Length: 466
Image (cartoon, rainbow, N blue to C red):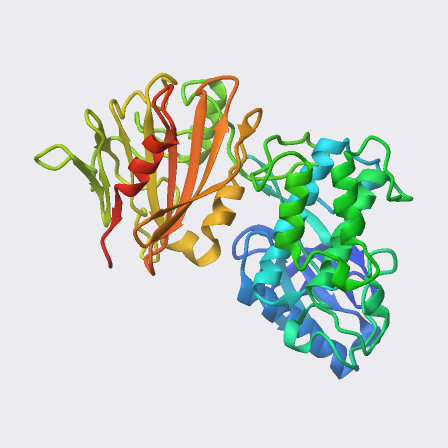
């Protein structure tokens, strides 16, 4: 077909790509003045009811999952000729296939990228969904405030585990498709995606002709990729989470967030730059996020005055912001109006506060300890504590193994980073707050202190039920 002028209410700008089942156009949403990707079922499949339903299933699945590691669906519609289309978030950074065409990355960023891809696939597996077509063309990059994020796309072949085996049509891309996917009677489950992850790893680390004995790749990593691509599903890792954990151990970072961010060619992650808030980088971050006042934090911040400012109680031991309370260490105070840039369903700032011996100085002076404590209902709907911590890697810092700290009914996921500049130690922690949302805490502990200081602070975080 020629280039249409409009698809529904969206003005078409140009063709982005075409595949066996669909064509993707770059569109413009005049109502929101934003660019979108519009995926339209190919004409040659317009009369195949099975393919039409598969197309709609992909949109429904992505809409239901609605996760930042998966491409997002904004709307669906139907052309005058009856073909369905889906309006997707634009992955403006292109695909992994495009970037691999220019060459393979060095080993460290390749492993970091593979970790990010596995994290996206793990989102599907936790929802009992098998992707079944993991290829470089289905790994996309989308811009964020501080760089790019990896997202998984093209779930047209994805199936729920209950329906992913038994008399299903052959599905997948040769070279990345697990052997059992070529057998319509075989069981296709999360181990089939693990095979695809292994093949992606071989492609990232070995160039156009991946080999199991890759030069320059650590032997433990090679062993992980060999197991992932074993011909028999029973010999592979059970799912993407298990593959990811094994990959991290093999790369020398046991169950820890990635510790370095690669360059522009293969960027991953979404953490903001580490550094003093008073530095040029810190000021740029603050301006970008709309931070104000002395409460500006490394990642997120609260203002220092006004509104529902958190204040110590009369005995000076508690700080509060909305339903969040923090038992203050001796000599510490609290300040804050809310979580900058994060709003609840009513458009109000979600609760957050900074606690420190000097809340006005701790973000700009690396010698001043302190902590940011925030509660987010929106994060609670979209993320898990482990995911939130994993999305906060710190450049140039070394990560310790992730811990789980049990405090009453609350289970904290805690990652500790040792850094060569600025604050010597940073701690990221997250936990479920019942049905209220997700608690996030970033701590710059007193210099020379042990993990018990952080654990005591976490034990003093309370959330009043809504």
